[in-house]
Each structure stands twice: as C-alpha cells, then as structure tokens.
Length: 335
Image 1: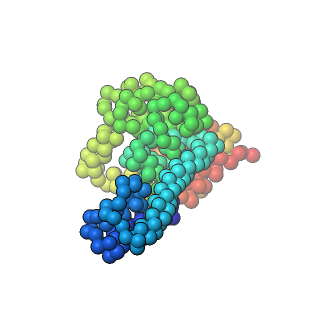
Image 2: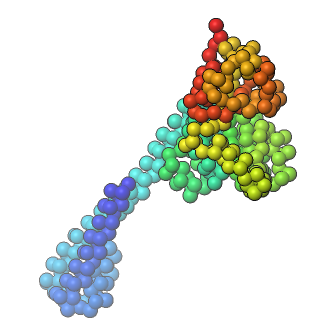
Image 3: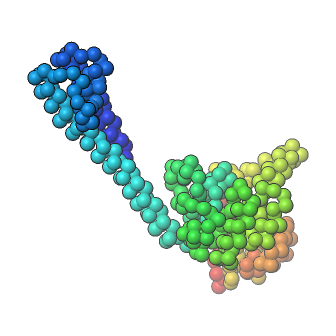
C-alpha cells in the first residue's frame, strides 16, 4: 500500500512539473504574462479546448503539441494510479476481512468480547493469553487499534444475531458484553443465551439497577466497574496492606506468587482424601484458600479434614511451579 501511495505522489509531482514547464515555456517563447501562460497550459493539459489565449507562433504551436502529449499522458497515468490505489485498497480490505472470518469460523471454545473500549481491551489482553478471543466492534477508530494489536475481530453491531453467529457464538465457551449502554448489554445477553444456552455470560452494568435486568436476560455474572473501582479505592485507604497483597497475587504476572483455581477431575488421585492426607501443602507448597463445590457452595479456609471430591474447584495460593504440581495432582487418575 505504501508503494502505491508513493507512485501516486510521484505522478502528482510530475504533473506539477509539466504545468511549471508549460508556464515557463509560454512566458519565454510567446512573452505572455504568468496568468495567460498558466491558463493556456491548463486548457492544453486537460484538453478543455477553449481556444488559444493569443495567436501562437510556429514555435509556440510546436511547444503546445509537446505539452499536449506530455500532459494528457500524465493525467491519464495519474488517474489510473489513483484508481488502482483505491481499488487495490478495497480488495486488500475485503481479502483481509475474509481471512479473519475464515480463522474465526475454525475457532471452538473461544471467548467473544463485545466492545473494545478501555474495559474490553484489558479483557482481550488478559484472556487471549490463555484462550482464543474474538472482538466484536463497529467503531472505526477501535478497529484500527484491533488491527495494530493483532486480535481477531468482526466489524459489526454486537446486538445483531447475524454478527454473533459470525463470531461463532454457538461454538464459544463464553462472552463478555461490555458496551457502554446497559440496554445494549441486556439485548446481547438475551440474543447470545438464546443462540447458545451453555454460554458463560459476563456483562457490564453501568447503572446500579441494571444488574437484575442483566441477570434475568441470561448473564451468569454482572460486574459494575464503577462500584468495584469505588470499593477498591476505599480499601486502598482502609486496608492498604491487604490491597497491596491482592494486587501482587492476582495482577502481577511477573511475580512468582499467584492465586489460581484448579478443578479436581473424576477419579483423580486426590479424590476421597482429606487435605491433610493429600499432602498438598508439603508436595506443592500451595495454600488452599477456598473450595467451590459443584453445587456452587463456597467453603472458605477449608479444615485439614475436608474430603476432596470430584468437581471441586480448589482456590490455591502458590508460586507457578507449585500450582503446576497441584494441577498435575488434581488431573492425574488414581491407581
């Protein structure tokens, strides 16, 4: 594309050079004024054909023929270059869009992010480290950012059923609806859940009373960025050390200490053992902060005699190596 622009610019410069040559030629050969020379050059180059400004000498007519051939040829060349640049740009855009749609059509168990504002961008950056993501956006300025950052995306209305189907909502694992309008987020939840009842839906709520509507529309989780932000700011003052610890454990990927959730599979070697018998603390160094049961019940700070069951989600605090060993224990079959 840059090469095509360069060609067009060079052609335009050549056209300016020919006009300059024509003006100087008529001034020198015919002794005309600047305005008369410019006028004669332009009507010759553009083939308007209004007639001669003044009667031409024989030298002047020969010079006019030269300008005519050079000018008309260059004008046609410039026009063809500009047309080619426009058409090829559209073709490249269409081909790029087709490649994106083809890649999206091959995805499965991916996550769809509706909206690429400040919240959507952070979600895309975090989730894409572990799962494929597709962003749905219709703002041209955000589309440019998506292309620069290399995310798979669809340009279109996220509230449209057709757009969600193109994004692979029927094959997706989850969807984030983070548009600024609560009404749009409600509509997306209704549409997406209708197309894929198994879809895990997380929706953004701008207004406090929107949470109930979003939950009724099918959202599994509703998050209010303003409310969370306000609470976080208050805790920074009231519980600064706790806030710093959680910030390090949850958000600082460069540090060893992390909080992770690990699911215990059916017939896992951990199944039927107590936390004490499993030796999780001794073998991995992990601290089990909580256990979420399949029923949804959350057991905080489980006791040493807690019996681990299939489907339990262990919320563990450890370094990366410890978490990897714990995941291996939870996913290894007994016997």
